[in-house]
Image (cartoon, rainbow over all chains, first blue to last red; front, side, top):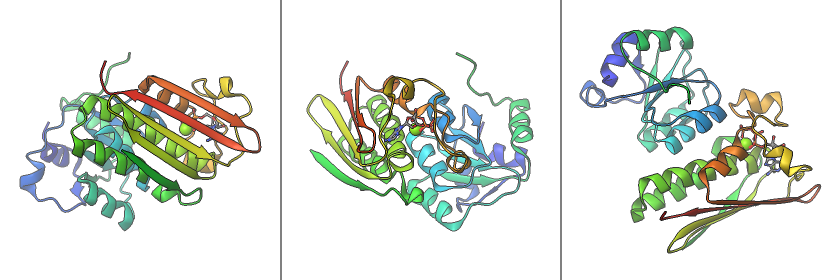
Length: 119
Length: 138
Ligand SMILES: Nc1ncnc2c1ncn2[C@@H]1O[C@H](COP(=O)(O)OP(=O)(O)OP(=O)(O)O)[C@@H](O)[C@H]1O
Ligand SMILES: [Mg+2]
């Protein structure tokens, strides 16, 4: 699923400033939804998109370590400037949606995006 | 090649800078991506532990011809029972740390999973040293 499709499904906006050309060239194969970075580090495998309600710099660093290329913040919350700046520096695209975590994940799943199965 | 990093025990926002820098360096040198991934996850977990549990310290990360060796040293409270600390789900993290997104008790087991060797030395009241080894080739 293209990141531009993720945006339209979730009514999300891009907060790191990439234009539509850029996000329609980012292809996401798997996603995960999680507020606990410990679990992202322990259980995420090849998911390229992280949906989260957590708002600090460690979200960006965790994404960086896991090669997650885009992070979508949920529930209408917006990260502080230092978080956005770090994401820009690391080349990670940030999105923001009004939908809560469970619903946002469900909407993407409904549209064919998958996460990791158990095991 | 050796890189030395000071790790602040109070600056949570910057925790992970060492791992970030070392990852960028390995990438630049052209180390295989699967090795970089293992190094990144293990090093970041250990760095976060040094900040949130060890009250800060330092890290030496060395790229040798056939392996990466990373040492984290802190003068924090130490670990009373290392075997227990290694168990998945065991954590002494406070609610404050949980609110920051950590404290699932998964870090040390995760480090073990992604390294070829992991050594922990710790003395209560003195501090902790964690040494991680990741081989570059199978
Ligand atoms: N450097 C350290 N100094 C003191 N105690 C430590 C140190 N590293 C780990 N510990 C102890 O070992 C426990 C388990 O560590 P581990 O990294 O597995 O989990 P965690 O840090 O609590 O949570 P997570 O890593 O999932 O965010 C910690 O809760 C802490 O009690
Ligand atoms: Mg930990």
